[in-house]
Image 1: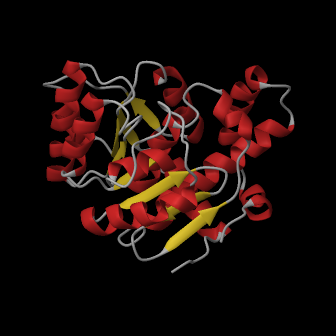
Image 2 (image 1 turned 90 degrees about the vertical axis):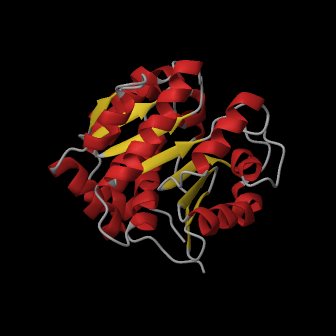
Length: 269
């Protein structure tokens, strides 16, 4: 069932993030840590890159939300990811799985399956990664998708129903589903794909928004995270000459995003 996302819902959850800043634990890849942290700070959240065994689990218990991103999963971090996921589940902390390049590379593919079995609150990935995670595709070209979100919707619905999670599929039109209801968001700009961490940081934002969700708001919160992120990208791109000027403008747009901008710019079905 396709439903619509309202500007009021987006603004409400963004307001909660800003008024009660969530502490977001990021077990993420080495390439994107700085950008991810700055994105969270721009939104008003507090980032913590706590990703070593012995610390990851205890921290997940006190964090507001957790991101597990498989971009550069070295051995120690893989252990920490499993530790954090288990602790998050035990503490009731929402956590997001971003299965970067799953399907095309063996170590992370096996790890993604193990983490998925722990039932993340949400999975965020591109279309090829979602299809590979569901066993319905071989994966994309490394971190790049070779499929589109609509093609991946059956796989997303399957994952959502089987693991009780929200699945967000990124693309020109983002598709977010809980296995029963589906939201589509057609905001964003191609410059977001030209900045390292442009996709990965959205996983951290999703974790922040899920931490601000009330019961039954998981789908809305994940979609609101995507909406805020992609609307800010449009705002930043409007005045950017290219990727170099886009990145700082994007952080400014996230920090200054208003209810009025959300109302006038949101494109959702």
